[in-house]
Structures are given as structure tokens and as C-alpha cells.
Image (cartoon, rainbow, N blue to C red):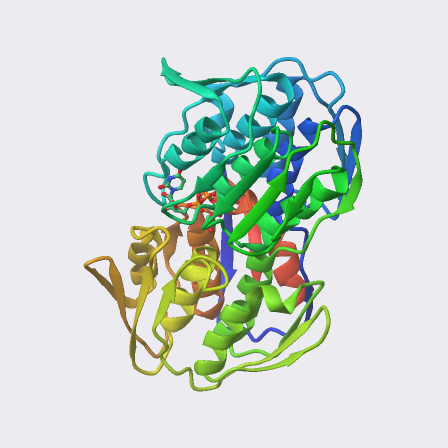
Length: 417
Ligand code: UD1
């Protein structure tokens, strides 16, 4: 198992580039199952989650060629509509094959995903949407068995905003007969990117990027080529790396409007920005003002940047509170940040942070993907050496993060133990 050794307290400078968005690539990979032929995705990051999804698609019968930021998926011979436990338990996003397999083959058997470090994470909304479209769902021996002779357009209203359920519903509805209305849909850029990819394949989805999607079913979809959008969470993590070390840096190959909510919060903390079409230069606050924050669905502050922002607030001059309305228990990073001598306590699912002057390096353990990123940020700012164990979590979602951070002057090293 690899670990990171970070010698903190160093200033960063220069440009750091953002890779393609994992959370857009994963559903788009599932969407390629809808067409008989070879789709080509570019600007694909090199990540373990992408490899896991590629493995699953191979099991289902697709042929995959993954090299040099490009992913070729030939879904001509898709014939085995099953997502086995070993793969779903490794990566929840596997559940995204449900909608496309139902639409393409009329059946799917997908292992019921378990909980994970950030919460219980049910799939009831995914299943409700499939049932509304006419599928029959049975849960047996830990598996979701879904069948549908024919999918028929329906009105689907989500009680809670769910990225995963919106995408699954959309991927099934594109081939359903008639019109589907999805209300209270997730409007995250990754949902919009998936919808745009489906439209490129020949689907008819309107309202893309809003909370009301209208889908007119079509008989056939076609394989296409498409460039993946940049990863807004990686971009935000890098901006916070600059901010927490009080360093001027430029984040390139990003879409600034995708992280407007973060930029707004960082401005409240005292940061300034020079924003261009695809790059953001951060002029950091030298005195960090405390800022309260509540993570909520897009366009509000993303839950996937909550841990990293919380790490930043540990060095604010004063106190603030942070809540996560998407995953209310997502605070596994707090105990580890406190090991670095941050001062945070959780009260009624709210993190109360008293800013400290300096954090102090220590051995810590990564518990999930974004929590690991928060520990890296804290380690960059902390005095002395921070050793982060279990960084396989970070390798799921950040493409060579240590190499990228070294490029802007960070003293971070990967060590195999
Ligand atoms: C996706 C992202 C994840 C991000 C999350 C929220 C991927 C691979 N993952 O996860 O990084 O943190 O969106 O932006 O893209 N819920 C239900 N029933 C359901 C589905 C969800 O109650 O059937 C709840 C969840 O428990 C959670 C909330 O809805 O409280 C939002 O979850 P959801 O948007 O579905 O997250 P994911 O799609 O799993």
C-alpha cells in the first residue's frame, strides 16, 4: 500500500492543469452501452475508478481500449447484463449500467450496493425511476433483478436531488416509448455532460443543465466521439491548495463557472481571482476570514469539496460552521484533521471550526476519496512532516495528484510500504 509523505509549510507557485472529470466519464462509459458500435472518449483521466468501470463493461461484453487519455468502447456485442457483487462493492457507480442495460437488452441484474464511508447511500430513487418507466424490479439474494419488455415514457419526480438516479433515469428514458419528464432532476455539470453525450448519440433531451428534463424516446442511438469536461472538483482542490498555503497559483484547463460557488466562498475568505475562459489565477488571502458553508446540490457548494474547504477553514482567523446537506454524516476527515492539531468538533451534524494559527504534521489515515484530498491540503500547510496512509482512496479520483502538486513546488512524495 502506498502512502504520501508531505513536508509542509512550503509556498507553491506556477500553473497546474486539470484532468477530465471522473464523475462525467463514469456515466458516459455506461451510456456507451446504448449503441451498437465503437464510441471514443477523450480527455479521460488515468484513475482506478475508470479502470473498474472498464472492467465491468468488459464483463458485460464490451471491448475496451484505454490508453493515453483516450477510451475506446465497442459495445456491439453486449450480451451479459450483469454487474457482479465484486465490482459493485468496489465502486458504487457500477449501478449506472442498470438504465442502459434495461434500455438495450430489456433486463439487468445488478448487485445491490452497500454503504460506504460517506453514508448509507440507498438506491431507492434509481429503482423508483426504473419502475415508473415500466420495469419490474425484484431484490433477491443481494441483487437487483430488473426486467422490461418495453420501457414507456413517464413522469418521474425525485423527492431528493440525486445525481446518480437522474443519470440512470435519463439513460433508460432515452429509448423509452414516448415522453419522460424528470422533475427535481440533478443539474450538476456531470449530469449535463451525460445528457449532451446522449444527445450526440441521437437522444432527444431538452432542459439540459436544469432541474426539469424532458426526454422524447428514440428507437436507436449511435456510437460517437466526445471530449470529456474538466474535473471541477480537482480544479477546486487545487485552488484550495493555493489558498491554504497562501500561494499564488494558476489552475488551467478548467471551466470557472462550474466552481462559482467555491470561488464565492473563497472571496468571502479574502481571496481574489483573475478568471479567464479556461483558467483561474488565485491571489490568496494572507489573513483567512472564517466563512460558514452549507454543501447542497448544484449550483450550491458541492459536497465533494466540503472536506477540502473545511481543511482550509482550519486556518481561518476566527470560528465558523460547515454543514453537508447532501451527505450529512460526511465528516470522517474531522478526526484526522484534529490529529494535525486543527480544532473542530461535530455537534448535531454541524462541524464547528475554531481556526488555529498553524497545523502540525502527523501520521494520518485517508478514509475516503475527498477526505484524503483534505488531508493532502492540510499536510501542505502544516508545519513538519505529514504521512498519509491508505492513499488508494485518492488514486480513485485524482490523476497523479502528487506529480501535479510537485509541479507547483509542493514537497510531496509517494512511498510504497
Ligand atoms: C454522485 C457523485 C459523488 C457526489 C454525489 C453528490 C459520482 C460517481 N458520484 O454520487 O461524488 O458526492 O453525486 O453530488 O458521480 N439518495 C437516496 N436515494 C437514492 C440515491 C441517492 O436517498 O436512490 C441520497 C443519497 O444518500 C444522498 C443524496 O441522495 O444523501 C445525493 O446522492 P446522489 O446525488 O445520488 O449521489 P451519487 O450519485 O451516489
